[in-house]
Structures are given as C-alpha cells and as structure tokens.
Image (cartoon, rainbow, N blue to C red; front, side):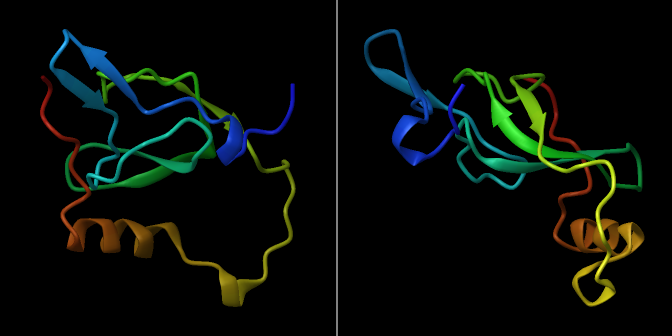
Length: 107
C-alpha cells in the first residue's frame, strides 16, 4: 500500500439524498479528511488527555462519532528533545481553555 498523500486522499463529502452534502469534522470544527495526521483526545469530565496519535483512514462522511481508524505513526521509542515537548497536563489545560475538553453531544 502506498503512502496517503493529497493526490490520493478520498473525498470528505458524500451526497445525502440529491440536495445536500455531509462533511466530517474534528472537535474544533475543522473539516476532516482521510490521510490527516490526528491526535485523539480521551477522558471525560474535567480532563482531556491525548490517547493516540496517528493518520486517519477509512472514515466515511456523515458521521463524526466512532468513525474511521488511526494508523500509528510513532515508533515505540522516540527521543525526547524537551524544548519541543509539553506535559500532557498543560495540553489538557490548553484544550480546556479553548473549550475543547468536552466531547460534543450525540446526534
């Protein structure tokens, strides 16, 4: 299987009936596309935690919940250059500050 790049990404829209198109979106409202590098946020209540990092694939338009899969993009051991790192509690605080710490209500 070749790399997923802009030229071979599946479309992010699909017809709904004959008059409307449905898009996939991330928690912050940004449109989602198969092949995007993504961070999955877990945790409920007052916390938000990064639980996975990967490439989105197999997502189908029309559903923002439990849609698609993530291919891992990180090897098990990675060097840590601390000037490029953030503590997960600080990332969680930034998510909360932006109102992205809570999962949107179901449809």
